[in-house]
Each structure stands twice: as C-alpha cells, then as structure tokens.
Length: 77
Image 1 (tube, rainbow, N blue to C red):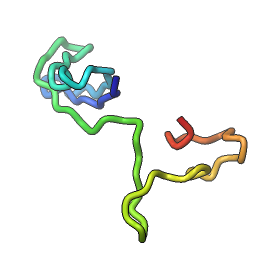
Image 2 (image 1 turned 120 degrees about the horizontal axis):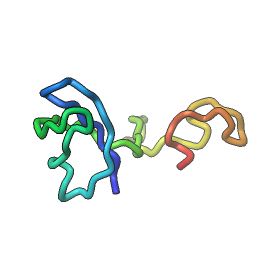
Image 3 (image 1 turned 90 degrees about the horizontal axis):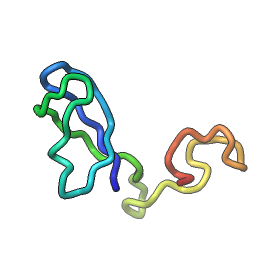
C-alpha cells in the first residue's frame, strides 16, 4: 500500500497516510477531521534522470557507509 503525503485545507496540518490506490483521494485529517485535503506524491520510489534516461537510484546513492549505516534515503528498501 503506498504512503501518501496530505495537507489539510481546513487546518493546514500536514500528514502521511497509507492508503489503497483506489482510496488515495479519500483521506481524513487526523487533527481536525476535515475531508478537504490535497494529496502529494506517494513516497518510496525515487528516480533520477541520467544520460541513458530515467534509472532507479543506484546503491549508495545517499553517500552513507557501505553497510548502509546512516543512509537516510529510500534506495536501500
């Protein structure tokens, strides 16, 4: 299930929610209960543009240690 970013138009709270794709536009603000929310892009997949086209980010993309310690990006999912 994708993780989406939302922003409530009523109270301006920003939150994340895992939603089935079919229900991605039916989120409710956890702070005020408002249903007027705008959706950002789902998290979890990141692509970069290269000379060959669009490729997934390679291992070690964030510059963390070789064992993945300190890696703060989603390239090591």
